[in-house]
Amino acid sequence: MAPLVSSTRELFAEAVRAVLETWPVLQIAVDNGFGGAHSQQKAEWMVEALQQYFIDNDELQQDEVEDFISDLMNNEFDTVVDDGSLPQVAQQVCEMFQQCQQDRLTEVREQIKQLIQKKSAGRAKATPAKTPAADDDDDESEDEEAMECDGGAGGASVNGAAVKEQHLPPQAARHEEEDDGWTVVRRKK
Image (tube, rainbow, N blue to C red; front, side, top):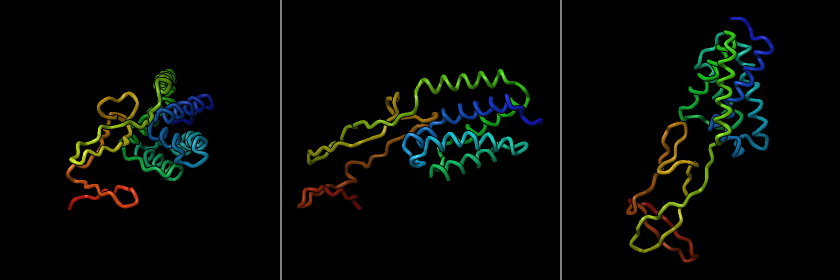
């Protein structure tokens, strides 16, 4: 297919930016500084790198784009993406590139608009929440910290994938208090 003209290139760059800015994995990596002090700049560079990858390579397949994005996340943010969202992101970018090549710019603009609305609706946030302590015979209750996504009630969800907390059954842990005031928790064998 024909290479993109400069106005279409700019639209495709805007599309890539919209897709990546609404991707929870990248949001979390940037928000938590997985890329170091320059995480935000790396995310912005990633938009340019992905756009250039499409321009430099003819007829990219979705799995090639997945591998490229995966490599960027691993190299720049020390993050391995295994939540199942990578194929969706790659597919979305591939479809938008094809639409730009086919001069279906109105569709691309509409998708960008939807992504921007999704972004402004709220970012994925991790907030500490207290969970009820398990009933123990020794009547000790300790505060446990759990990560919970805003908006989730019974369980957290990222891209529709349920995130479950794992707890040891009460009988699997044994508490011993040492002389220095620390509590040692050991598993029963």
